[in-house]
Amino acid sequence: MTALPASGKARGMQYDTVILGAGAAGMMCAAHAGGRVLLVDHAKAPGEKIRISGGGRCNFTNMHCTADAFICANPHFPKSALAKYTQWDFIELVDAHGIAWHEKTLGQLFCDTSAKEIVAMLRGLMDKAHVDLRLQSSLGDITKTDGSFTMTLTTPDASTKITATHLVIASGGKSIPKMGATGRAYEIAESFGIPVTPTRAGLVPFTFTDARFAPISGTATPARVTAGNTSFDEALLFTHRGLSGPAILQASSYWHDGETITLNLLPKNDLFAKLRDQRQTYGRRNFTTELAKHLPSRLVDHLATQFDLTGNLADWSDVRLQNLCDNLSNWQMTPSGTEGYRTAEVTLGGIDTDALSSKTMETKTTPGLYFIGEAVDVTGWLGGYNFQWAWSSGMAAARHIAGHP
Image (tube, rainbow, N blue to C red; front, side):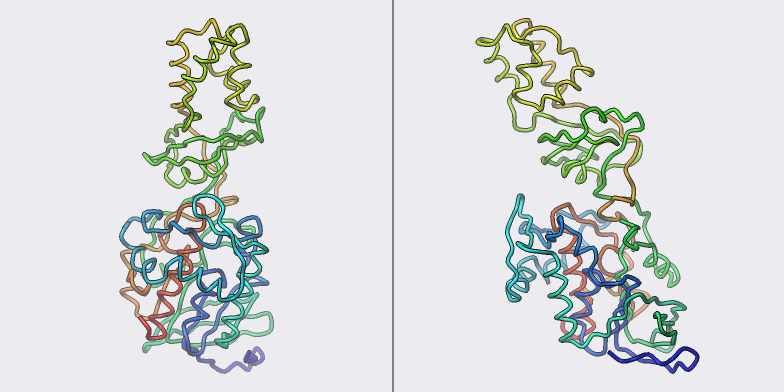
């Protein structure tokens, strides 16, 4: 790495490309952009979200990744980048570096050993490309004149003016602020007149001010959760604060304040037929005892406070059984809110895609300025989709910069 001159004696330093944000998208772009690349991040280490993701194993992509799994004001926007650098391309890269992986559910791919292997792979690619990585550093006073960007690079040791032909913003969204997430990308966009769509927390647990599920906190069950006319069949987890689990996180991205969500506790369970059969043999048993054969017992106890579950099973007519099953498959409630950016895995909204080229991620009004990754108004489902967007959008910008469309 080239040493910066001492503060107060700074001379201009010129790069072909400056990238702000050493996360998944920024590192991917830096490794493939070519030329003299500077990668800047305020963190102590690159790829911190990669390192902690997937329980430390990094759910690095999804085998079923298509544009249909992404939320964007323009649903066609993600198609080009995802098609030009697919999940299979990233899997090939992972395989080439000898990283062992496995598939969990629903096409989700994880490292066998550690997410650190993905970080190490990207760092190795950047080292090979002679990327100048500056950590615990920042960019300020960004302007563009005469076809190049001028900005102030501040590191722990120095502050100097630098210039670049290309500026790539990969600083992410607002999710998980304890890891340093900020709205810096949106500030830079607005300074160049690039529109930003409203942002909100996505892939995030729901909360209820009355703590109604606190007595059954930790209880999980398969469910279908519906929000905004979109449904997900995965695990549902009751918590002290409200609802979580994969099905809830997925649905949260389609929910807006004040809207109702629907829980179907019987997504693949013909409970009516099963209880009617049980009635022939175990009719003298308490109804909740028999219901607990199909749902967690703590959940049954809670349901008894919501619905009339009194009596023995023999006392329940077909009509009463069907009414209960209908209620359990259409249990509606209105969350008070979500846990917000504090625990959100992604930020919904961001840089307006109408201002970007879908093929290159370059802004239409400011040549040489690119936005990639989570900063853009493209948000994927839970399960590796957002990492794939990082790889794909990062490569789209890198290939354009390098002159290899």
